[in-house]
Image (cartoon, rainbow, N blue to C red):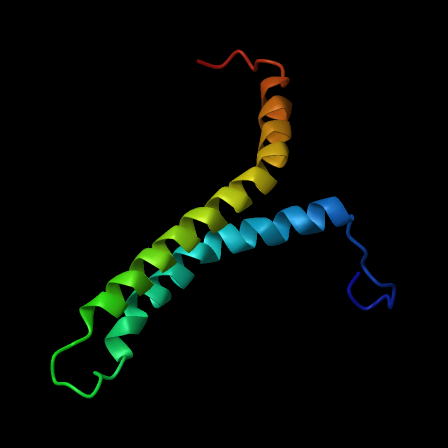
Length: 96
């Protein structure tokens, strides 16, 4: 009942898990934006593009995305394991 006036409280664990899942869904988009960002850089004082700085930036973003993915995977692993165990404990339906 949305109009009842009582606030909706979610358990902290499920709320954090959902936010981590949202972050995992958005991480590829963030990575794409960060990878395309060097195209907006203006060249330095010379007309030749500064490729060294661009490559360092791209490798730093790449490493950061790997670390962020590892952190999200580590945080989501217990929830996914519990979900798999719950699915495995269901009785067989006999279809097939």
